[in-house]
Length: 407
Image (tube, rainbow, N blue to C red; front, side, top):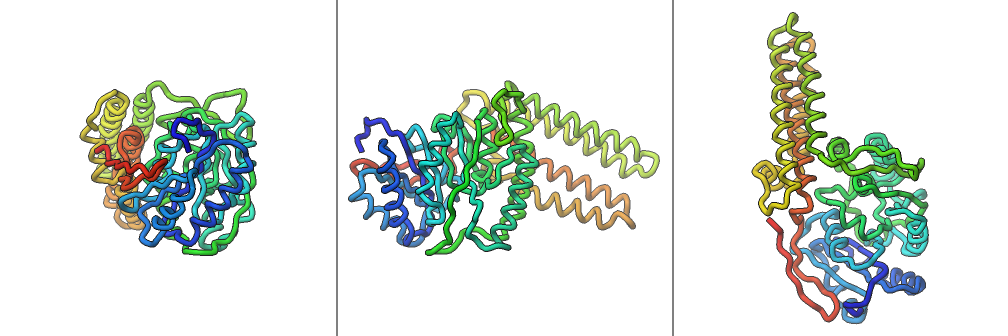
């Protein structure tokens, strides 16, 4: 493809150990895109595969002018692969899809048609999902219901990778950790209009699934973290074009003030609980009051860190560096389990050791809160820190580019 030619459509396909799937998938994509009649590119992002996926893609690239390949130095996860694909995509419209042949490229024209109905994001809905019932479909239904209730973005299938985007919208969305499943909710922070359509879904023929029941706990933590992120960085707008199929949000001028509001409400709640307990047990009362004071300190530090992230500075704040690097950009995954354990342990001891119970529960809430507030700091800095290292970028005349982490 001529580097100066304007590209209408980019297909972004993250892959990991899919050596048997990438060739037939590309052929299906190519046939569909040729019928659309517009310029297009297909961008495979090899997320550090350990099999022959990259070798197959390299062979395909030699005879496929519309194909580009990004290879990571090491496995960075699906969210990082999607972020890299969105970054390098040159199309005005972008389609994302899985590389396992379960998504059907024949749905691409339908997604694009829906996108042209004045939407910014169109999500695929695998209504007849061809996956294992108990390990994949049931957890997915439950997770989608919870995500809809928590975020206010009620679509049927957040986990479906087959989506269509306006490039100018998705390129603004900060992706990190495993937040790709929250893309619909994350786009609403910048005012995106969302729709969904039913898409086909096929059983996996080659390779093995990269997901299982073990991710349920992590998804729960992510949902709680993202609820706070939405509360800080977006608020609902009474837009005329808001319908039952999508929600519209507007940017907040000062997310720092939202942090302070949440902090004030939380601290006041603990102060009131502490004052009510002061005649029953001094230790419990003092624990709640101390928890309220701790939340004030955490809130002030978080607001300051978010304020620094919004400035045009190169260096990350000390607090941001801690949550980004020490916690691998997922503080809720580090603090959340330990905080939840202490809180549950406190509940177990509530009938015989009231003072110890209160201490454990307050400690658990404080630790969990550190993880949640840390997530808002990471989100505010997400665009400034790259989650992946590109080893090779094959494009055009086999240009080789190397990309290192920003920090």
